[in-house]
Length: 103
Image (tube, rainbow, N blue to C red; front, top):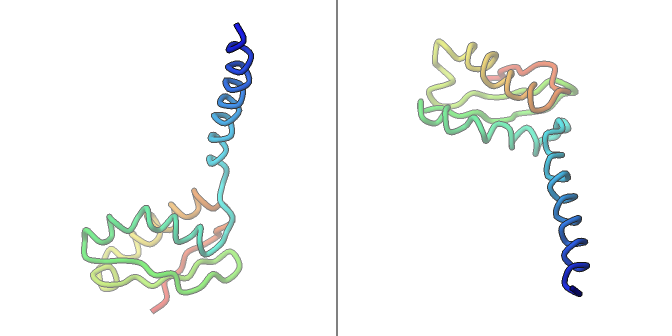
């Protein structure tokens, strides 16, 4: 019987931990670390095609990137930039207004 009270608080603690783990669904702040973390999710796809992306600068709500390798000279690079990279960054970090390519 004395083991029941310690089990109850432990169960309550684990349920509050579960609800706290739901919090990461919140949008990320516009920081270099968060931009890099989001781009890391896309890099395997870019690398599979012989390319990559580098963050050059964050200028207010504008993220400036450099497409590298095959992505830099690919005719579909504008589509990759706008429909892939920019879309993913804007979903993860709502503060991002635009992603532009610098050479």
